[in-house]
Image (cartoon, rainbow, N blue to C red; front, side, top):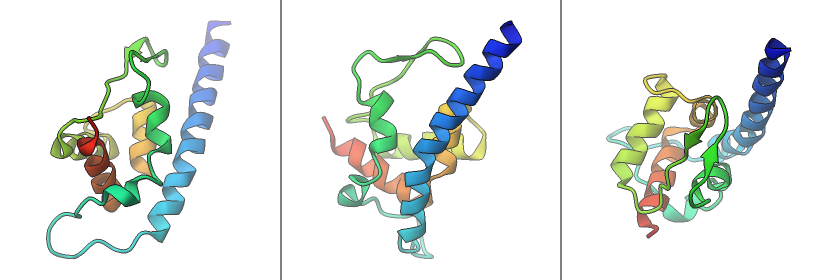
Length: 124
């Protein structure tokens, strides 16, 4: 029974992550390519169409995720943009790991990451 519960929980998280990743993929395909020289500059306005995959967890004060274990979800509003970029790139590369964040970060382009970092850094 325990294996079945774990499998069902894993499938549920994968389905949620996939539904969150699809909008990110659509926006990544529409985004203009980043300039060849230097990192992408964040665009706060462009991020407004990309935050739907973030606010469900990071926009709820005191929110705790329950998969794979009880985990306090940090509020990222007002966080340093470079920190947010570094964290998302670490999830994307596998240097940092959390099932939901791995899936979300994998769906983001460098421009998406820069836009989201700029957006959340500007919130207070």
